[in-house]
Image (cartoon, rainbow, N blue to C red; front, side, top):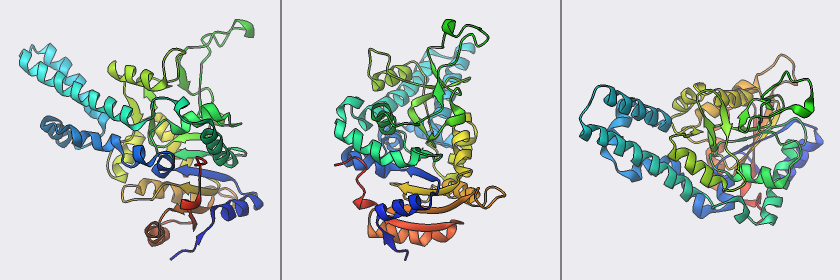
Length: 347
């Protein structure tokens, strides 16, 4: 079994080597904030809790648990029923199923979060900002497989220099010669700041929306908390961008059909230096992540343009055994550190 080291020693060694530092976060990062809230993945379990036989049959027909696909199918079906003059009872049945799915998702989102960022005490925000800072100080990136708002909230309140999620406001009149007359679009869209992007939501996030043309980031509107804004968008049949498919292949297929998710995944495939992994256990449905890291390990023609090593956090002895058992699947050096002694939220 691989030796379990101290996180501080691993980080100090990497910094001494002046290695490009990257960080990947999993659900353990959110559990470290509040294990009661994040000890289960509400977005993957709420479908089962609905116990709706029609939804179960729909998932079987579509052969996917991609919520976005199901919601689109229901929307199209509703329109087709209207066109063909279907009986009102059938249209009501489809509408009720659509409503049950949307309301279930809204309830899951609300149950997964504190009400707003200001519920997180300032010392915890500051501690988490310090935890993230080494990975954003240079040319590295932070990746997260989580859907929740926690990382977004820390970046907002922690004022971490250089943090860039790629979103910004587009110029409405880019040809305007006088900069003082420039007007910007009200929406935060993915694109204006992509060249310097170093924050990547690998599986999407609850505050990211695809309107069919642009990827938009929901933000506080000056009157409502973020969770309220997201809930209102979902009530209006806008749905967050997040990967809910099962296997690694299913997840990769869903990623490939969204330009934002594909960009984030390609960034993971082109990592350089070293990657520290916290709270991500490389389970049976994470083959696509291992595949990306293996691509990065042989990326580039020059010796310095590839992923050299991965430092994976193990929270328990069983975690350490599991990571040791799959280490040979990774085509670069794998080392372990004791993540139970890491305190990203300063608790």
